[in-house]
Length: 111
Length: 113
Picture 1 (cartoon, chains in turn blue, green):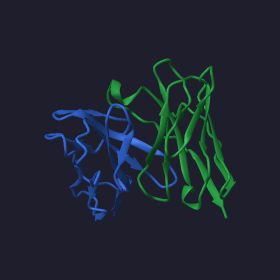
Picture 2 (cartoon, each protein chain N blue to C red):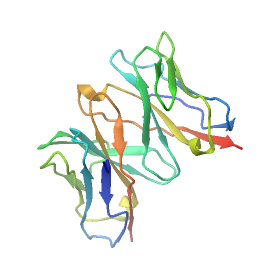
Picture 3 (cartoon, each protein chain N blue to C red):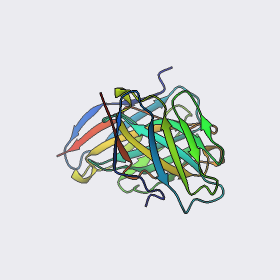
Picture 4 (spheres, one colour):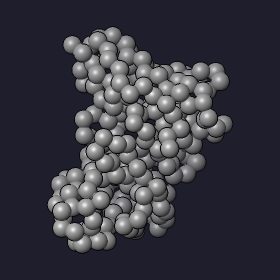
């Protein structure tokens, strides 16, 4: 079991570019979430999903889109990258009787 | 805002028990206490969670006071690999729907040789 796999691990974008951060899980967990972590800060929730076809906004959703067409995948799309989106992005998957399993993160720099 | 209060940092000697406190005086009846840790810049790792009874697993023990306003995470025999930031989070259980985990600043635990 790979758990939660995030790609890419590192990315540099220019302001205004768009990109998709990939997240895949092989645990068949119904719940998935995206968080961002700025330097020296705690994690903040961007978007989350309770199952395929169902997504909702978290604390800091502006500038990001998500979709959940399958149980396994939960991609996060940056529409038009801004320097304020420089951060580490973590994807997580969870089931009802446990906690979330987090991926290893994508480190994004927007210049 | 996080609904929990934790000391910003703690030290513990290797091999000793590490006791990490957390105050959550406004916890609601349906909220559980969850503990996660983050080692260096890795993704957070789930440790344990509980409602009102004490819980133990292979990683740690969780002691929740009878009034549920505070709790303590216990790492029984701390090792250098337990050096991390530990987050105490109160939330309805995941089984009730998607969790919106609110990560505060956590406690930076340093295990000293």
